[in-house]
Amino acid sequence: MNNGDLEVLCCFCGQDSTFSKAIEITIECDKQTKDVQAVYAHSKCLDKVLHKSVPRAFDL
Image (tube, rainbow, N blue to C red; front, side, top):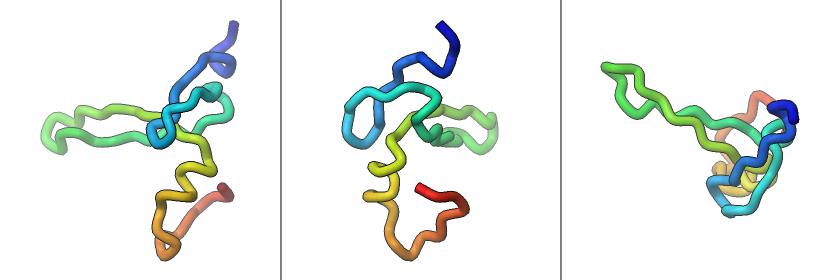
């Protein structure tokens, strides 16, 4: 199995997706230590929760 086939959960709807199809969202938890956490989302779920005035640099 390659990394693209790994199952991940959408942080918005809780349903599964594959790593290759999901959008990775990186959250910087602590600005001093640069600790980060990655979560994953379906593109349609991310598009649904982002306010329409937030510019998208990519197609969802």
